[in-house]
Image (cartoon, rainbow, N blue to C red; front, side, top):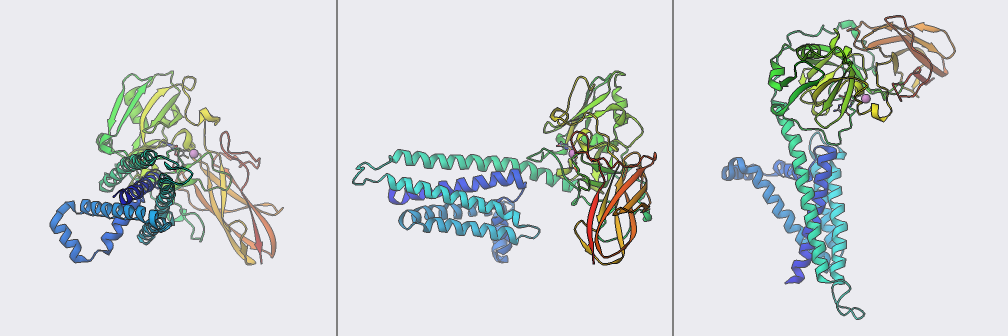
Length: 508
Ligand SMILES: Nc1nc2c(c(=O)[nH]1)N[C@H]1C(S)=C(S)[C@@H](COP(=O)(O)O)O[C@H]1N2
Ligand SMILES: [Mo]
Protein backbone atom coordinates (compact mmCIF):
# COMPACT_ATOMS: atom_id res chain seq x y z
CA UNK A 1 0.00 0.00 0.00
CA UNK A 2 2.68 2.48 0.96
CA UNK A 3 4.24 1.74 -2.42
CA UNK A 4 1.47 3.84 -3.84
CA UNK A 5 0.62 6.29 -1.05
CA UNK A 6 4.11 7.53 -0.27
CA UNK A 7 5.01 8.61 -3.79
CA UNK A 8 1.44 9.79 -4.36
CA UNK A 9 1.75 11.94 -1.24
CA UNK A 10 5.01 13.36 -2.58
CA UNK A 11 3.23 14.16 -5.84
CA UNK A 12 0.38 15.99 -4.08
CA UNK A 13 2.77 17.89 -1.79
CA UNK A 14 4.91 19.03 -4.73
CA UNK A 15 1.93 20.25 -6.72
CA UNK A 16 0.40 22.04 -3.71
CA UNK A 17 3.74 23.80 -3.19
CA UNK A 18 4.04 24.69 -6.89
CA UNK A 19 0.49 26.04 -7.11
CA UNK A 20 0.89 27.83 -3.77
CA UNK A 21 4.08 29.55 -4.91
CA UNK A 22 2.44 30.59 -8.18
CA UNK A 23 -0.74 31.89 -6.52
CA UNK A 24 1.32 33.91 -4.05
CA UNK A 25 3.62 35.36 -6.70
CA UNK A 26 0.75 36.16 -9.05
CA UNK A 27 -1.26 37.81 -6.26
CA UNK A 28 1.68 40.02 -5.33
CA UNK A 29 3.23 40.72 -8.71
CA UNK A 30 0.59 40.37 -11.41
CA UNK A 31 -2.33 41.22 -9.08
CA UNK A 32 -4.27 38.73 -11.12
CA UNK A 33 -3.51 35.68 -13.22
CA UNK A 34 -4.17 33.01 -10.59
CA UNK A 35 -3.30 29.76 -12.41
CA UNK A 36 -6.12 27.87 -10.71
CA UNK A 37 -8.74 30.46 -11.62
CA UNK A 38 -7.36 30.76 -15.16
CA UNK A 39 -7.76 27.05 -15.78
CA UNK A 40 -11.22 27.26 -14.16
CA UNK A 41 -12.15 30.06 -16.55
CA UNK A 42 -10.96 28.01 -19.53
CA UNK A 43 -13.09 25.08 -18.37
CA UNK A 44 -16.15 27.32 -18.10
CA UNK A 45 -15.54 28.53 -21.64
CA UNK A 46 -15.01 25.02 -22.99
CA UNK A 47 -17.83 23.24 -21.14
CA UNK A 48 -20.77 22.33 -23.35
CA UNK A 49 -23.97 24.26 -22.66
CA UNK A 50 -25.83 21.21 -21.29
CA UNK A 51 -23.14 20.64 -18.68
CA UNK A 52 -23.08 24.31 -17.63
CA UNK A 53 -26.86 24.37 -17.35
CA UNK A 54 -26.90 21.07 -15.48
CA UNK A 55 -24.32 22.34 -12.98
CA UNK A 56 -26.13 25.65 -12.51
CA UNK A 57 -29.40 23.73 -12.09
CA UNK A 58 -27.87 21.50 -9.41
CA UNK A 59 -25.73 24.01 -7.55
CA UNK A 60 -27.28 27.38 -8.37
CA UNK A 61 -25.00 30.21 -7.30
CA UNK A 62 -22.62 27.58 -5.89
CA UNK A 63 -21.68 26.66 -9.47
CA UNK A 64 -18.31 28.43 -9.28
CA UNK A 65 -17.46 26.75 -5.99
CA UNK A 66 -18.43 23.42 -7.53
CA UNK A 67 -16.09 24.09 -10.42
CA UNK A 68 -13.17 25.00 -8.15
CA UNK A 69 -13.72 21.94 -5.95
CA UNK A 70 -13.95 19.64 -9.00
CA UNK A 71 -10.82 21.18 -10.42
CA UNK A 72 -9.02 20.70 -7.09
CA UNK A 73 -10.09 17.03 -6.98
CA UNK A 74 -8.79 16.47 -10.52
CA UNK A 75 -5.50 18.29 -9.79
CA UNK A 76 -4.94 16.36 -6.52
CA UNK A 77 -5.73 13.02 -8.19
CA UNK A 78 -3.46 13.87 -11.11
CA UNK A 79 -0.69 14.98 -8.75
CA UNK A 80 -0.93 11.74 -6.76
CA UNK A 81 -0.78 9.75 -9.95
CA UNK A 82 2.21 11.78 -11.14
CA UNK A 83 4.01 11.00 -7.86
CA UNK A 84 3.44 7.29 -8.26
CA UNK A 85 4.44 7.44 -11.93
CA UNK A 86 7.65 9.28 -11.04
CA UNK A 87 8.48 6.50 -8.57
CA UNK A 88 7.97 3.64 -11.03
CA UNK A 89 8.88 5.28 -14.34
CA UNK A 90 10.95 8.45 -13.87
CA UNK A 91 10.76 11.01 -15.34
CA UNK A 92 7.19 10.32 -16.51
CA UNK A 93 5.70 11.85 -13.33
CA UNK A 94 7.58 15.08 -13.85
CA UNK A 95 6.59 15.08 -17.51
CA UNK A 96 2.94 14.71 -16.48
CA UNK A 97 3.26 17.78 -14.24
CA UNK A 98 4.83 19.62 -17.16
CA UNK A 99 1.77 18.74 -19.24
CA UNK A 100 -0.45 20.12 -16.45
CA UNK A 101 1.58 23.35 -16.51
CA UNK A 102 1.16 23.52 -20.29
CA UNK A 103 -2.63 23.36 -19.84
CA UNK A 104 -2.33 26.35 -17.49
CA UNK A 105 -0.22 28.25 -20.03
CA UNK A 106 -2.74 27.46 -22.75
CA UNK A 107 -5.60 28.59 -20.54
CA UNK A 108 -3.80 31.84 -19.75
CA UNK A 109 -2.80 32.84 -23.26
CA UNK A 110 -6.16 31.97 -24.84
CA UNK A 111 -8.11 34.20 -22.42
CA UNK A 112 -9.05 37.42 -24.18
CA UNK A 113 -7.11 40.40 -22.91
CA UNK A 114 -4.32 38.25 -21.52
CA UNK A 115 -0.71 38.48 -22.55
CA UNK A 116 2.22 36.11 -22.33
CA UNK A 117 2.98 37.46 -18.82
CA UNK A 118 -0.23 35.83 -17.57
CA UNK A 119 1.26 32.44 -18.45
CA UNK A 120 4.20 32.90 -16.07
CA UNK A 121 2.39 31.70 -12.91
CA UNK A 122 1.60 28.37 -14.58
CA UNK A 123 5.21 28.01 -15.68
CA UNK A 124 6.33 28.78 -12.12
CA UNK A 125 3.82 26.32 -10.63
CA UNK A 126 4.98 23.49 -12.89
CA UNK A 127 8.67 24.35 -12.44
CA UNK A 128 8.50 24.37 -8.64
CA UNK A 129 6.41 21.17 -8.57
CA UNK A 130 8.81 19.37 -10.93
CA UNK A 131 11.87 20.29 -8.85
CA UNK A 132 10.22 19.29 -5.57
CA UNK A 133 8.87 16.01 -6.94
CA UNK A 134 12.30 15.06 -8.26
CA UNK A 135 13.79 15.85 -4.85
CA UNK A 136 11.15 13.96 -2.80
CA UNK A 137 11.14 10.84 -4.99
CA UNK A 138 14.94 10.68 -4.89
CA UNK A 139 14.68 10.85 -1.10
CA UNK A 140 12.03 8.13 -1.11
CA UNK A 141 14.29 5.92 -3.16
CA UNK A 142 17.07 6.56 -0.66
CA UNK A 143 14.90 5.22 2.18
CA UNK A 144 15.25 1.74 0.67
CA UNK A 145 17.92 -0.69 1.85
CA UNK A 146 20.99 -1.16 -0.33
CA UNK A 147 24.03 -3.32 0.14
CA UNK A 148 26.14 -0.49 1.54
CA UNK A 149 23.27 0.99 3.61
CA UNK A 150 21.04 -1.85 4.86
CA UNK A 151 18.65 0.64 6.55
CA UNK A 152 18.57 2.98 3.59
CA UNK A 153 20.54 6.22 3.29
CA UNK A 154 17.78 8.36 4.76
CA UNK A 155 15.03 7.47 7.21
CA UNK A 156 11.38 7.14 6.28
CA UNK A 157 10.67 9.78 8.89
CA UNK A 158 12.80 12.24 7.07
CA UNK A 159 10.94 11.59 3.81
CA UNK A 160 7.54 11.91 5.51
CA UNK A 161 8.66 15.06 7.32
CA UNK A 162 9.96 16.64 4.10
CA UNK A 163 6.76 15.77 2.26
CA UNK A 164 4.63 17.23 5.04
CA UNK A 165 6.75 20.39 5.19
CA UNK A 166 6.46 20.81 1.42
CA UNK A 167 2.68 20.46 1.57
CA UNK A 168 2.37 22.79 4.57
CA UNK A 169 4.58 25.46 2.98
CA UNK A 170 2.52 25.24 -0.19
CA UNK A 171 -0.75 25.53 1.72
CA UNK A 172 0.46 28.63 3.58
CA UNK A 173 1.57 30.26 0.31
CA UNK A 174 -1.74 29.35 -1.33
CA UNK A 175 -3.85 30.80 1.47
CA UNK A 176 -1.73 33.95 1.74
CA UNK A 177 -2.02 34.44 -2.02
CA UNK A 178 -5.80 34.05 -1.86
CA UNK A 179 -6.13 36.56 0.99
CA UNK A 180 -4.04 39.14 -0.87
CA UNK A 181 -5.73 38.61 -4.23
CA UNK A 182 -9.12 38.60 -2.51
CA UNK A 183 -8.67 42.18 -1.24
CA UNK A 184 -7.69 43.35 -4.71
CA UNK A 185 -10.57 41.56 -6.43
CA UNK A 186 -13.09 42.84 -3.91
CA UNK A 187 -11.88 46.44 -4.40
CA UNK A 188 -12.02 46.01 -8.20
CA UNK A 189 -15.60 44.80 -7.90
CA UNK A 190 -16.78 47.77 -5.81
CA UNK A 191 -14.91 50.16 -8.10
CA UNK A 192 -16.80 48.77 -11.07
CA UNK A 193 -20.09 49.46 -9.26
CA UNK A 194 -19.32 53.04 -8.18
CA UNK A 195 -21.25 55.90 -9.78
CA UNK A 196 -19.34 59.14 -9.44
CA UNK A 197 -21.53 62.22 -8.91
CA UNK A 198 -21.69 64.85 -11.64
CA UNK A 199 -19.18 67.64 -10.98
CA UNK A 200 -20.52 70.77 -9.34
CA UNK A 201 -17.97 72.61 -11.49
CA UNK A 202 -16.86 71.08 -14.77
CA UNK A 203 -13.36 71.49 -16.15
CA UNK A 204 -12.94 74.15 -18.82
CA UNK A 205 -13.41 72.14 -22.02
CA UNK A 206 -10.25 71.12 -23.84
CA UNK A 207 -10.11 73.66 -26.70
CA UNK A 208 -10.23 72.03 -30.14
CA UNK A 209 -6.97 73.83 -30.94
CA UNK A 210 -5.17 72.16 -28.00
CA UNK A 211 -4.41 69.15 -30.08
CA UNK A 212 -2.51 68.67 -33.35
CA UNK A 213 -3.28 65.69 -35.50
CA UNK A 214 0.23 64.33 -35.88
CA UNK A 215 0.85 60.57 -35.69
CA UNK A 216 3.17 59.72 -32.79
CA UNK A 217 2.48 62.96 -30.90
CA UNK A 218 1.30 62.35 -27.30
CA UNK A 219 -2.49 62.74 -27.06
CA UNK A 220 -3.40 65.90 -25.13
CA UNK A 221 -5.28 63.76 -22.56
CA UNK A 222 -3.50 60.57 -21.51
CA UNK A 223 -5.84 57.58 -21.20
CA UNK A 224 -5.97 55.83 -17.84
CA UNK A 225 -4.51 52.70 -19.41
CA UNK A 226 -1.52 54.62 -20.83
CA UNK A 227 -0.89 56.79 -17.77
CA UNK A 228 2.55 56.16 -16.25
CA UNK A 229 2.56 54.42 -12.88
CA UNK A 230 5.16 55.03 -10.17
CA UNK A 231 4.91 53.86 -6.59
CA UNK A 232 6.61 51.73 -3.98
CA UNK A 233 3.61 49.40 -3.60
CA UNK A 234 4.64 45.82 -4.30
CA UNK A 235 1.02 45.01 -3.56
CA UNK A 236 -1.57 47.56 -4.72
CA UNK A 237 -3.76 48.36 -1.70
CA UNK A 238 -7.28 46.97 -2.12
CA UNK A 239 -9.29 49.54 -0.16
CA UNK A 240 -13.07 49.28 0.17
CA UNK A 241 -14.59 52.79 -0.08
CA UNK A 242 -16.80 52.00 2.92
CA UNK A 243 -13.66 51.40 4.98
CA UNK A 244 -11.91 54.51 3.70
CA UNK A 245 -11.55 57.53 5.93
CA UNK A 246 -9.35 60.62 5.80
CA UNK A 247 -8.08 62.17 9.00
CA UNK A 248 -6.69 65.69 9.20
CA UNK A 249 -4.60 66.02 12.34
CA UNK A 250 -1.51 67.72 13.74
CA UNK A 251 -1.17 71.48 14.13
CA UNK A 252 -4.86 72.19 13.67
CA UNK A 253 -7.54 73.71 15.84
CA UNK A 254 -10.16 71.13 14.84
CA UNK A 255 -9.34 67.62 13.68
CA UNK A 256 -11.36 66.59 10.63
CA UNK A 257 -12.59 63.15 9.64
CA UNK A 258 -14.11 62.45 6.28
CA UNK A 259 -15.69 59.25 4.96
CA UNK A 260 -15.94 58.34 1.29
CA UNK A 261 -19.68 59.00 1.12
CA UNK A 262 -19.17 62.37 2.82
CA UNK A 263 -16.50 63.18 0.25
CA UNK A 264 -18.77 62.24 -2.67
CA UNK A 265 -21.54 64.40 -1.20
CA UNK A 266 -19.34 67.52 -1.36
CA UNK A 267 -19.46 69.76 -4.47
CA UNK A 268 -16.76 68.06 -6.53
CA UNK A 269 -14.77 69.95 -9.13
CA UNK A 270 -13.16 68.81 -12.33
CA UNK A 271 -9.73 70.00 -13.40
CA UNK A 272 -7.20 68.98 -15.99
CA UNK A 273 -3.72 68.66 -14.50
CA UNK A 274 -0.45 67.23 -15.78
CA UNK A 275 1.32 64.93 -13.36
CA UNK A 276 5.07 64.32 -13.59
CA UNK A 277 7.62 62.21 -11.75
CA UNK A 278 10.85 63.74 -10.45
CA UNK A 279 12.57 60.63 -11.86
CA UNK A 280 11.55 61.58 -15.38
CA UNK A 281 14.74 61.87 -17.43
CA UNK A 282 14.99 64.58 -20.08
CA UNK A 283 12.85 63.18 -22.92
CA UNK A 284 11.33 60.55 -20.62
CA UNK A 285 7.75 59.34 -20.46
CA UNK A 286 6.97 59.57 -16.73
CA UNK A 287 4.40 62.27 -17.40
CA UNK A 288 0.69 62.24 -18.18
CA UNK A 289 -2.25 64.60 -18.36
CA UNK A 290 -5.71 63.71 -17.07
CA UNK A 291 -9.00 65.30 -16.13
CA UNK A 292 -9.46 64.69 -12.44
CA UNK A 293 -12.60 64.91 -10.33
CA UNK A 294 -12.12 65.87 -6.71
CA UNK A 295 -12.60 68.23 -3.84
CA UNK A 296 -10.25 71.13 -3.12
CA UNK A 297 -7.98 70.33 -0.18
CA UNK A 298 -7.93 74.02 0.82
CA UNK A 299 -11.60 73.80 1.87
CA UNK A 300 -10.90 70.81 4.12
CA UNK A 301 -7.82 72.48 5.61
CA UNK A 302 -9.90 75.60 6.24
CA UNK A 303 -12.29 73.45 8.29
CA UNK A 304 -9.35 72.13 10.32
CA UNK A 305 -7.89 75.63 10.89
CA UNK A 306 -4.12 75.02 10.65
CA UNK A 307 -1.80 76.85 13.05
CA UNK A 308 0.05 79.82 11.56
CA UNK A 309 3.35 78.08 12.44
CA UNK A 310 2.68 75.12 10.19
CA UNK A 311 4.52 75.08 6.85
CA UNK A 312 3.97 71.53 5.61
CA UNK A 313 1.32 68.82 5.26
CA UNK A 314 2.53 65.24 5.60
CA UNK A 315 0.18 62.96 3.68
CA UNK A 316 0.23 59.22 4.34
CA UNK A 317 -1.09 56.40 2.17
CA UNK A 318 -2.83 53.32 3.46
CA UNK A 319 0.41 51.36 2.91
CA UNK A 320 2.50 53.82 4.88
CA UNK A 321 4.13 55.87 2.10
CA UNK A 322 4.47 59.58 2.89
CA UNK A 323 4.84 62.88 1.04
CA UNK A 324 5.63 66.33 2.45
CA UNK A 325 3.81 69.14 0.67
CA UNK A 326 4.40 72.84 1.39
CA UNK A 327 1.17 73.98 3.03
CA UNK A 328 0.79 76.98 0.73
CA UNK A 329 0.44 74.67 -2.29
CA UNK A 330 -2.60 73.15 -0.57
CA UNK A 331 -4.15 76.38 0.69
CA UNK A 332 -3.63 78.79 -2.24
CA UNK A 333 -6.09 79.06 -5.12
CA UNK A 334 -4.60 76.30 -7.28
CA UNK A 335 -6.56 73.09 -7.86
CA UNK A 336 -4.91 70.93 -5.21
CA UNK A 337 -7.54 68.23 -4.80
CA UNK A 338 -8.47 64.98 -3.16
CA UNK A 339 -9.26 63.15 -6.38
CA UNK A 340 -11.80 60.35 -6.75
CA UNK A 341 -12.12 60.35 -10.54
CA UNK A 342 -9.69 60.15 -13.47
CA UNK A 343 -10.89 60.85 -17.00
CA UNK A 344 -14.52 60.17 -16.13
CA UNK A 345 -13.91 56.92 -14.25
CA UNK A 346 -13.29 56.14 -10.59
CA UNK A 347 -9.54 56.16 -9.96
CA UNK A 348 -7.96 52.94 -11.22
CA UNK A 349 -6.64 50.84 -8.31
CA UNK A 350 -3.04 51.42 -9.36
CA UNK A 351 -3.61 55.18 -9.51
CA UNK A 352 -4.82 55.43 -5.92
CA UNK A 353 -8.38 54.13 -5.64
CA UNK A 354 -10.48 55.24 -3.88
CA UNK A 355 -8.82 58.63 -3.14
CA UNK A 356 -5.51 60.31 -4.04
CA UNK A 357 -4.01 63.78 -4.04
CA UNK A 358 -3.31 65.82 -7.18
CA UNK A 359 -1.40 69.08 -6.76
CA UNK A 360 -0.56 71.15 -9.85
CA UNK A 361 3.03 72.33 -10.05
CA UNK A 362 4.72 69.79 -7.78
CA UNK A 363 6.38 66.49 -8.63
CA UNK A 364 4.43 63.41 -7.53
CA UNK A 365 6.85 62.42 -4.76
CA UNK A 366 6.02 65.56 -2.75
CA UNK A 367 2.32 65.79 -3.50
CA UNK A 368 0.44 63.08 -5.38
CA UNK A 369 -0.20 60.58 -2.55
CA UNK A 370 -2.27 57.66 -3.79
CA UNK A 371 -4.51 55.65 -1.43
CA UNK A 372 -4.27 58.68 0.88
CA UNK A 373 -5.69 58.21 4.39
CA UNK A 374 -4.21 61.00 6.49
CA UNK A 375 -3.05 64.61 6.33
CA UNK A 376 -0.92 65.76 9.22
CA UNK A 377 -0.41 69.50 9.41
CA UNK A 378 3.17 69.99 10.61
CA UNK A 379 6.51 71.65 9.86
CA UNK A 380 9.42 70.72 7.56
CA UNK A 381 11.75 70.88 10.57
CA UNK A 382 9.69 68.26 12.43
CA UNK A 383 8.96 65.58 9.84
CA UNK A 384 10.53 64.07 6.74
CA UNK A 385 8.81 62.01 4.05
CA UNK A 386 9.56 58.76 2.22
CA UNK A 387 11.75 60.13 -0.59
CA UNK A 388 13.20 63.07 1.30
CA UNK A 389 14.63 60.52 3.74
CA UNK A 390 16.34 58.90 0.76
CA UNK A 391 18.27 61.88 -0.52
CA UNK A 392 15.65 63.67 -2.60
CA UNK A 393 14.97 67.34 -2.12
CA UNK A 394 12.48 68.56 0.47
CA UNK A 395 10.82 70.79 -2.12
CA UNK A 396 9.88 69.52 -5.56
CA UNK A 397 8.42 72.14 -7.89
CA UNK A 398 8.13 70.80 -11.44
CA UNK A 399 10.89 72.13 -13.71
CA UNK A 400 10.20 73.78 -17.05
CA UNK A 401 10.78 71.11 -19.69
CA UNK A 402 9.97 69.96 -23.20
CA UNK A 403 10.10 66.78 -25.25
CA UNK A 404 10.29 65.79 -28.90
CA UNK A 405 7.80 62.99 -29.65
CA UNK A 406 8.18 62.89 -33.44
CA UNK A 407 10.31 61.99 -35.22
CA UNK A 408 11.34 59.38 -32.66
CA UNK A 409 15.04 59.12 -31.89
CA UNK A 410 17.05 57.07 -34.37
CA UNK A 411 14.30 57.21 -37.02
CA UNK A 412 14.87 57.53 -40.74
CA UNK A 413 12.74 60.19 -42.37
CA UNK A 414 12.29 61.27 -45.96
CA UNK A 415 13.80 64.55 -47.13
CA UNK A 416 11.33 67.39 -47.53
CA UNK A 417 8.92 68.90 -45.02
CA UNK A 418 9.02 66.81 -41.82
CA UNK A 419 6.61 67.39 -38.91
CA UNK A 420 8.60 67.76 -35.70
CA UNK A 421 6.27 67.81 -32.68
CA UNK A 422 6.09 67.20 -28.97
CA UNK A 423 4.94 68.56 -25.64
CA UNK A 424 6.22 71.22 -23.24
CA UNK A 425 5.25 71.84 -19.64
CA UNK A 426 5.72 74.12 -16.68
CA UNK A 427 2.86 73.23 -14.37
CA UNK A 428 1.13 76.11 -12.65
CA UNK A 429 3.23 78.64 -14.54
CA UNK A 430 2.42 77.79 -18.14
CA UNK A 431 4.42 77.65 -21.38
CA UNK A 432 4.61 80.71 -23.64
CA UNK A 433 6.97 79.55 -26.41
CA UNK A 434 8.82 76.56 -27.79
CA UNK A 435 11.85 76.70 -30.06
CA UNK A 436 13.60 74.09 -32.13
CA UNK A 437 17.25 74.02 -33.19
CA UNK A 438 18.48 71.90 -36.08
CA UNK A 439 22.17 70.96 -35.83
CA UNK A 440 24.13 74.19 -35.18
CA UNK A 441 21.47 76.43 -36.69
CA UNK A 442 19.56 79.21 -34.94
CA UNK A 443 16.68 78.63 -32.51
CA UNK A 444 13.46 78.76 -34.53
CA UNK A 445 9.93 79.33 -33.21
CA UNK A 446 7.67 76.30 -33.10
CA UNK A 447 3.88 76.67 -33.32
CA UNK A 448 2.09 76.15 -30.00
CA UNK A 449 -1.26 74.44 -29.74
CA UNK A 450 -3.84 76.21 -27.56
CA UNK A 451 -3.29 75.86 -23.82
CA UNK A 452 -5.87 74.10 -21.65
CA UNK A 453 -4.55 75.90 -18.58
CA UNK A 454 -1.24 76.77 -16.92
CA UNK A 455 -1.46 73.41 -15.13
CA UNK A 456 -1.29 71.27 -18.25
CA UNK A 457 1.29 70.46 -20.84
CA UNK A 458 1.08 72.03 -24.26
CA UNK A 459 1.63 70.50 -27.66
CA UNK A 460 3.94 72.17 -30.20
CA UNK A 461 4.97 71.55 -33.79
CA UNK A 462 7.58 72.70 -36.21
CA UNK A 463 7.74 72.19 -39.98
CA UNK A 464 11.31 71.20 -40.75
CA UNK A 465 12.73 71.35 -44.28
CA UNK A 466 14.88 68.26 -43.91
CA UNK A 467 17.88 67.68 -46.14
CA UNK A 468 19.54 64.26 -46.57
CA UNK A 469 22.09 63.23 -43.96
CA UNK A 470 22.37 62.83 -40.20
CA UNK A 471 20.80 65.63 -38.17
CA UNK A 472 20.31 66.62 -34.55
CA UNK A 473 17.07 68.19 -33.32
CA UNK A 474 16.87 70.07 -30.03
CA UNK A 475 13.92 71.63 -28.25
CA UNK A 476 13.59 74.25 -25.54
CA UNK A 477 10.59 75.92 -23.93
CA UNK A 478 9.99 79.35 -22.42
CA UNK A 479 7.59 79.68 -19.52
CA UNK A 480 4.88 82.29 -18.99
CA UNK A 481 7.31 84.41 -16.94
CA UNK A 482 9.77 84.53 -19.82
CA UNK A 483 12.23 82.08 -18.30
CA UNK A 484 14.00 79.97 -20.92
CA UNK A 485 14.58 76.25 -20.29
CA UNK A 486 18.18 75.65 -19.26
CA UNK A 487 20.59 73.60 -21.34
CA UNK A 488 22.60 72.70 -18.22
CA UNK A 489 22.50 68.92 -17.84
CA UNK A 490 21.50 67.73 -14.37
CA UNK A 491 20.54 64.32 -13.12
CA UNK A 492 17.07 63.52 -11.71
CA UNK A 493 18.48 63.40 -8.15
CA UNK A 494 17.78 65.42 -6.00
CA UNK A 495 15.01 67.55 -7.51
CA UNK A 496 14.47 66.71 -11.17
CA UNK A 497 16.50 66.55 -14.39
CA UNK A 498 17.39 69.48 -16.60
CA UNK A 499 18.89 69.72 -20.06
CA UNK A 500 17.51 69.82 -23.56
CA UNK A 501 15.88 66.86 -25.24
CA UNK A 502 17.99 66.00 -28.25
CA UNK A 503 17.01 63.59 -31.00
CA UNK A 504 19.23 62.28 -33.81
CA UNK A 505 17.55 61.37 -37.06
CA UNK A 506 18.71 60.25 -40.46
CA UNK A 507 17.16 61.91 -43.48
CA UNK A 508 17.18 59.90 -46.72
N1 LIG B 1 0.95 55.78 -1.89
C1 LIG B 1 1.84 56.22 -2.79
N2 LIG B 1 1.55 57.32 -3.51
C2 LIG B 1 2.42 57.78 -4.42
C3 LIG B 1 3.65 57.13 -4.63
C4 LIG B 1 3.94 55.98 -3.86
O1 LIG B 1 5.00 55.36 -3.99
N3 LIG B 1 3.00 55.54 -2.96
N4 LIG B 1 4.52 57.63 -5.58
C5 LIG B 1 4.38 59.04 -5.97
C6 LIG B 1 5.14 59.36 -7.15
S1 LIG B 1 6.83 59.37 -6.96
C7 LIG B 1 4.55 59.73 -8.32
S2 LIG B 1 5.48 60.34 -9.60
C8 LIG B 1 3.08 59.65 -8.50
C9 LIG B 1 2.73 58.83 -9.72
O2 LIG B 1 1.34 58.71 -9.85
P1 LIG B 1 0.74 57.71 -10.90
O3 LIG B 1 1.31 56.35 -10.63
O4 LIG B 1 -0.74 57.76 -10.76
O5 LIG B 1 1.19 58.21 -12.25
O6 LIG B 1 2.45 59.05 -7.38
C10 LIG B 1 2.94 59.47 -6.14
N5 LIG B 1 2.10 58.90 -5.13
MO1 LIG C 1 7.69 60.21 -8.84
